[in-house]
Picture 1 (cartoon, one colour):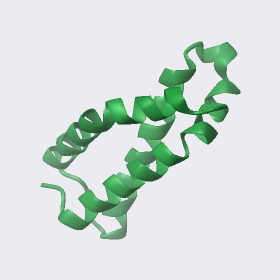
Picture 2: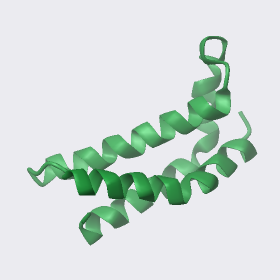
Picture 3: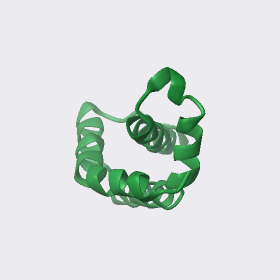
Length: 93
């Protein structure tokens, strides 16, 4: 189980990236000729950044996430995926 403080950190990261979706959408647009789908690319960038933060939180504690922690992280993203996608679709870029 992801520790409460790490869970709160993940939620704050998601909130941050949602609030900055337009910047990440612009980044994805820079590669739209190669990727084609700006929304999917932006979603991937955001989830990748949040995942990196998730891993870094464990490194900072000199730990490794367990399989269960990683599965719980995936569930967190699934629960917030629609919110992330809405922020991308609403973002000006």
